[in-house]
Length: 290
Ligand SMILES: Cc1cc2nc3c(=O)[nH]c(=O)nc-3n(C[C@H](O)[C@H](O)[C@H](O)COP(=O)(O)OP(=O)(O)OC[C@H]3O[C@@H](n4cnc5c(N)ncnc54)[C@H](O)[C@@H]3O)c2cc1C
Image (tube, rainbow, N blue to C red; front, side):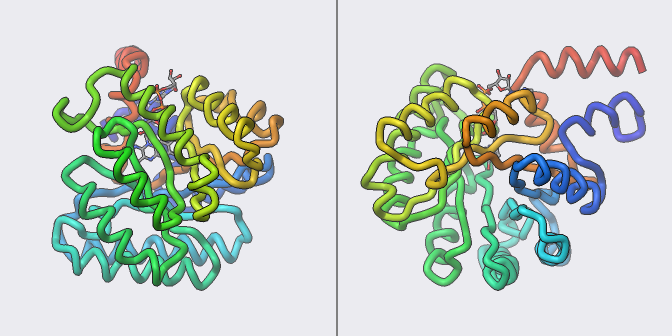
């Protein structure tokens, strides 16, 4: 796929490019429009401790470049990229390096949530690091049946939490198979994360979605509870629903867009294709034309 120009063009819709500079050029453009960024160095499930250390090094370089260029951007990483499959201690050491560098410049470091096999380990590691690295932020997925309970624990911690619907294929025993149930779960969790109780505990929620009904739910819930616009944020992915950026900004909302870069785009790209059948049709049409 990487060698077909038509495929490469379509990948570029979702991925800024192979290099950090490609991502930071997009960040600079977004910042100029009043939009903040998350930056992801693509990669997951590394097979060696050396690859995991290199991934952490890439995030250190990213943090340095963000500070040097005075950009409004923060990293968003995956624990399996930092070696979670190789053992908790390998991953923890890498995460601590990145978190400490972020802490030194007052930068948040988001820890993405991966498939259900990693949820306990990710939340445990986050919980264990939360006291010493207050700049770590974590993610929950509305499609998991367990998430309402996880959110209660995160509220007790006063966590910075991204709420997304969830991007992995999960069995019905642990995830809602029906999209309507996922949306209902998302809406309930929006209300919970914006509740007076959660905000009093210093929870900072980020609503990561392109679903206009969910975005409206967040705004409505915030309005009802008298929540200020600087007490939460909206997050979106590069390449999806850019048409919503200007109206969200005009409504005074804090918007952050996630910019992925790197050579290891396959897993990320496939999740973007899978969550929208229309993407597949478009993709294959482009391939045939190419
Ligand atoms: C900033 C950010 C960080 C994320 N981090 C994680 C994470 O850590 N773990 C995780 O499991 N998931 C993560 N996700 C992905 C998320 O779980 C969903 O898979 C993804 O956002 C699609 O769901 P949706 O909320 O946009 O709603 P949907 O109901 O899926 O989509 C709503 C509308 O958005 C548009 N849209 C959505 N997806 C696409 C697409 N691929 N291509 C084109 N249009 C699309 C369509 O117009 C669609 O009708 C993240 C998402 C965002 C925005």
